[in-house]
Length: 591
Image (cartoon, rainbow, N blue to C red; front, side):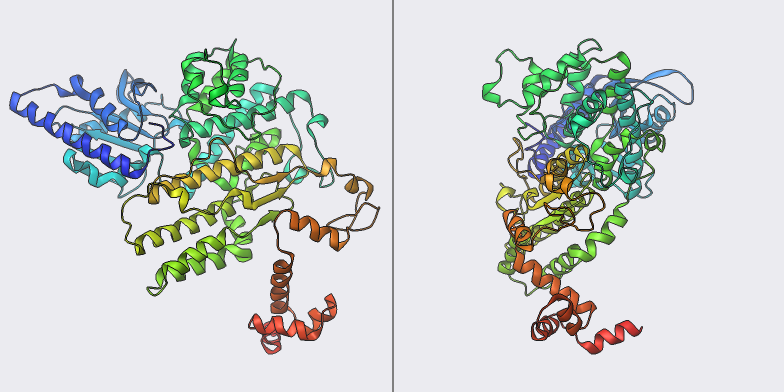
């Protein structure tokens, strides 16, 4: 079964079967006085436990990882190790679990486990008991017997990729990810490669693919695609670690470029139209569609160092990256100075929240909380609010890598999931939904971005799809199976338009207008702007009324009317509807 379809209800049933099977085996061992269960049954135990979460431990080579013990300096073998997720040690039936815990910690302290693959959890067992600890988190200790495993599903959901990541962990993960991507980028184009990005890039400087150094352009496109593959490995877009295994087992430095070229073609080809002689691993990748793999790239030639850098990136847990820095991290690898800063330069989610919160998010969250907390709220009212979320259109006219769009969409989906859960609770649906597709309405198709530079625009489109998948995983954890998004049929509307718009070129540099016209120094006619807004689904009347409602909260209605050419009667009607009066305005201004 693919990780994309495994939901909470299925995991729970798998755990029940696992618990019953191993309880019977333990009973048999005691009756037969079996000893030495660690060496004979450990791999079988771990395989069965991980299979409950759709992880094939043998296939992705999780067993017997060689490592150095800190106390002795000698080499040993870790029972089971999943990079960035957990380390596991088993002891024979009845052995003190503290010994297993100490052994796992000894391996982690030995220096052979890199920081980018350091596990978050320790799992130890004597077959009858299971103990789980989250490293560095006080009070995270959970211990239970094998027959209680189904009752502790939530403590093990991290094995299915559903885990709570703290803000500090997100920041640390972002720094590690930036270092890994910088290694990849420098391996491709050299460590002296340097290009202005972000605030250092002139606002009036259009960049297109053809304007950029060919090597930098190829590396940029390659990194975008590799980002998608790395994230897909960890996020359940296909079976776990499929890309990692493919790189490790099917490539070497000499053929990696040609193999990647083949993989990109497979991802852009519907399953039914693929060559029947595809290798086993290649054939397991799904059809992606969209534009990400549509353009053919020149064949890339890799060195052993480049392949090593890619494998290092494969071992990282990419689902821990904060969406707030997702796009910027991959844009800023082009800057030599930013690469040396090791990820310390990103806009925080707090700052993004200060912008999108007052604009719309805070109001929607307050309304959602009010509806959910009020016992008299009807299911009809909840559904109407959920459906209304799908009518909004969001646009960022200078979206960069899409950070604001990504965070806005993620947080709106969380509000929608909150409402869906409340609807199901009030309807008495306590089980898992068979098809959550019928319950979610919000899509990335409601989000629009305009970006002057080609590379951030590409990143923004990719990041929006990936945060959509992240939101679907959260929905699946909450209510059941989430919508399938592959092949891609719905995308965010990210437009790289300025480099091809002659009106911006003829308007001259330094033009003061937000929407320059086709004649130098002139702005677009309002009717033209209104027509273009309608084409992307924005309500001009609704936007105008909302703007007036906001303006009369900040200025006296008569001032607004005179400034914008409205009648005083209209302005005062908006003030009345907004609950504002001249007296309140004066009082606020005098404070």
